[in-house]
Amino acid sequence: MAQYKDYYKILGVGKTASDAEIKKAFKTQARKCHPDMHPENEKAKWTEKFKDLNEAYTVLSDKQKRTIYDQVGQEDFQNYARGGGASRASSGGAYGGNPYGQYQQYTYQGDPGAGFGGFSSGGGQFSGADFSDFFQSIFGGMGGMGGFGQNFGRSAAAGQSSGDVEAEIALNLEDAHRGGNMQLTIPSGRTVTVKFPAGVSEGKKIKLKGMGNPTRRGQGDLYLIVKIRPHAMFRLEGEDLHVPVVIMPWTAALGGTISVPTLDGPVQVKVPAGTHNGKKLKLSGKGLSSKGSLFVTLTIDVPRTLSKEQRDLFVKLAQLG
Figure (tube, rainbow, N blue to C red):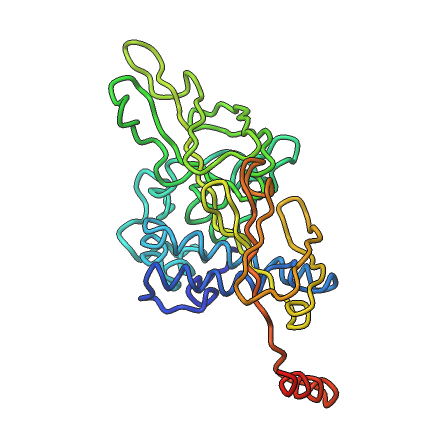
């Protein structure tokens, strides 16, 4: 039986939190929980925490999903999960007794745990993010980390009479960077393979000919609009990426080499002597695509505690001016 998840508690915010507060809490928690920030023997534990965090943000950052989640509530969900039925008027009806069925009219038939939240990814190229049984019981495959968003099925503004349909599809930043093939099962039950080019950008439209709504003139087209999920480490701006990196005072003063994370793995970067706090380094070709750049913002970390020897050295440095 799926266990209720308190998404507000997971993010550390109150139920009246604003969108800005939710976003800020996610960024703060994501940096703390990201598996790459912890030792190898603790990665499994933090991976699970990070999945919960992503799931909580997926729901609470989306107005429609947040409204549904708030309407369900812990007591109602647990009562339904025990087989007692839902206490709200939403139960029963055309959805076979599932009170949440009305929210799942655009779910998909793939393995809920595979690839992109309800889709099976071609060749395992897309890592995606698994959702819990709790999430699936309410939302099915509707949106989330690498799934169709809540706008699936809306008529394209320019093609309402042509049968054209637009659907948002969310990708992880790493997947958008690498590109690849992904198999999707559309509401008609047909499974299609969609190719995403490496470095695909936010807002990019991918056309699936003949997969829209039927009209007298024939079948319309389906347009997938790419949305890129927020990342715990990198901030996306167009095709450029931004990442903060902490350096020690002596590295800032004397210069040195530091390890900088990129979407292709860590690289070694030289820090010039006399670097000031907030200095930015530009790594060309290391953005979302080869056309983009990675901007590294350096933050100087002042040690909170000093040994006697370190303190003496700082005192001597201060005296020398």
